[in-house]
Image (cartoon, rainbow, N blue to C red):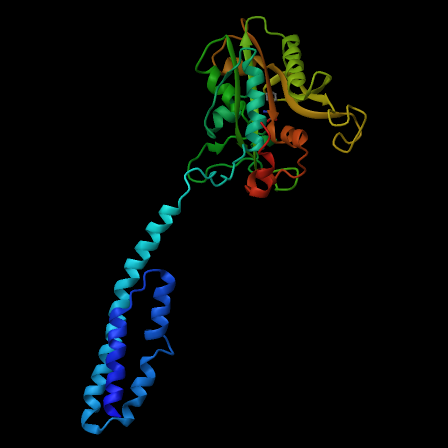
Length: 345
Ligand code: PHE
């Protein structure tokens, strides 16, 4: 009886030695058979009670030897099998198979809108001037003829830098006018796209950060007619050849006279819709003749030169062009929103 049990264990050891699992599946079979929770060694160990006492030690050692052998072999083969499986996978590689589709990105609708505006003005001789977003009080306000007590300077609207007196986040791209005019004499013909900041309550229609494109043309004999023709050209390029413009008198500290410009609603063809609030017109920009005081402030001779300037918001135009009804979508980077612009250019 006891000899038979010994033989069983020895046979098992031989079996383990002979086993040659080569695939991950075979290896797993091996593990289950010799090392799993219901492995074949367990019942053999149970049989120890039929072994005479003086042989129990040897029997136990033999079963243990089988167990250790299985363990060692499993650890060794694990690596070999994994490497073999990897290599086999490489051999299955079909180099002629079409590639995995790549997730295609999209250009942000604000970039698309901004690029379009810039290209329209570049075609008629404007060059791009980009400037800092952290500005000083002088370039953002003082040079632009904005008096100390002007509401635009109010702490409520402007983000001032807490630790650097006199520095702020620019509230409009008009600060670039001052930057360029203090650096360069006319003729000046620039557009300045960029981000601006105002301390506004965030809602579907307003945000504390948004984008503008500033335009500035200073030379001898620049007139309001030049401004109007330039903006009409822009409106038609941007919104279509049927678009009309109208100018309403307005006020900005840095232009005189000043105007706000509307374009005829290109959504409803000026028939009246909820975008234009049934007026047939949508406001897109502020403009005017550069105030002689601003030229003077920046070191340009106002008796010799005149100029016009305009500033337009980008978000509003992008919202109109793409039918976006919430300005916050531009800044949330939700891919479900951005993905919709894959085809836009
Ligand atoms: N800076 C003005 C604004 O932010 C726009 C503007 C620019 C008006 C240039 C006139 C001339 O609203």
